[in-house]
Length: 402
Ligand SMILES: [Zn+2]
Image 1 (cartoon, rainbow, N blue to C red):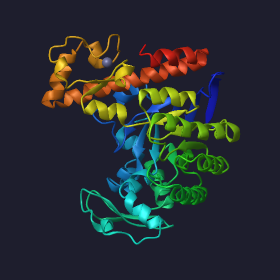
Image 2: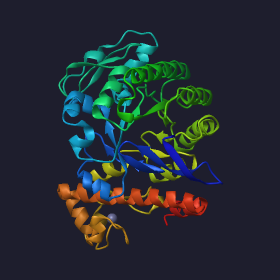
Image 3: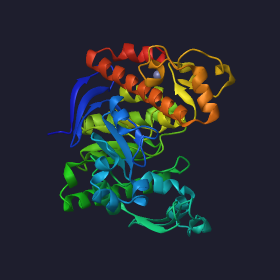
C-alpha cells in the first residue's frame, strides 16, 4: 500500500491533499512539521503541540547522535517514548548539519586540496570537519570536542535507534556558492550514499516499518536537479525530499522546486514529497501549489523565541516584531479571532512587548503557541481549499493577508 493516499488534486496547479500513513498515525497533507531538534519543540510540551493540530514533528539525528546518543534513546524506548510524543516523527539524516560545519573545508576537499588548518580549529562549543571521504565524514563534536564519525550506515543506524517514522537519506547539502562542477560531483556522491542507505535498510529488514525518503540535490542547475530526481525516483525510496541550495531568492527557489516536482509528477506521482528547511508563509503557499506534501522549518518557533509574532500582514513578511516601542501601550491582541492561548486570554501586544523586553520565558512560549497556531491554520486552509476545489481563490486571499 502506498504511504500517501492522495484524496484531492487542484486542477489549476500541482497541489494535492492527502493522508500519509506512518507507524505512529496519519499525517494530513499538505503539512507543516515543527522542529523538535533536540527532542523538544522548544518551550512547549508535546501535549500542547498535539493540541495545536500537528501530526508530526522533526527530530535532528545529528544533535541527538551527539547528545544523548542513539543507544540511550533506544534503551529508553525510542524517541517517541523519550520525549512523550505519540504521533509521527521525521528525522533528518545529519548530513545537513555535519556539512554546515565546514563547507569551505568540504569545497577544498572535493576540489582535491588538502584539508586546511580549519579542520582542527574547533574545540568544544564549535564543531569542525576533520575529513570527508567516500566512506563518511569525520568531525569534531561541538559539544565536547571529541572526534566522531558519521556515514550513511551510521545515520541509518541512529535513525533506527530513534525509531523514526520517516528516515531521511544521508546526503551532502551543497552550499549556494558551490560551482556547477562541485555540485555535480557532490550530487553523484549523494546518490552513491543513497544506495548505501538502502543497502543498510535492506540488511536490517526495514527497521520498524519506517518510511525512507531519498533526497534530491543538484543545486540551482536544472539538468542536475532533473537527473537527481530521476535517480531518486528509481531508487525505490518510499518518499522523496528536496534539499540543498534552492537559490539566492524566492523566484529562483520556486523554479528549482518546480523542476523537481515536475519531474516527480512524471516519474513518481504518488510518492510523498518533503521540502527541507523551508517555511515562510509565502513559501508554504507556493510550495503547496508546486506539489509539496510536507515542510519543516525553524522559522515560526525561532521567530517566536526572538520576540516576533506571525500575523496576516504580507507587506511586512507576515511578521510583527514585538520589541518595537510602538507596542509599549498597545492594548490590541496579537491577532483578532486567533484561537491561540495568548489571544484567547486577551493578552495585549503591550504585555507581550513587556515579556519580550524583560526576557521572560513566557514571552517565547506564548509567541511559539501563537505562531504555530498561525501556521497550523494556514495549512488547514490550504488543505481544505484543495479538497473543496478552491485553492486559487484561497491562495490569493492568503497572499493578500486575508
Ligand atoms: Zn494568537
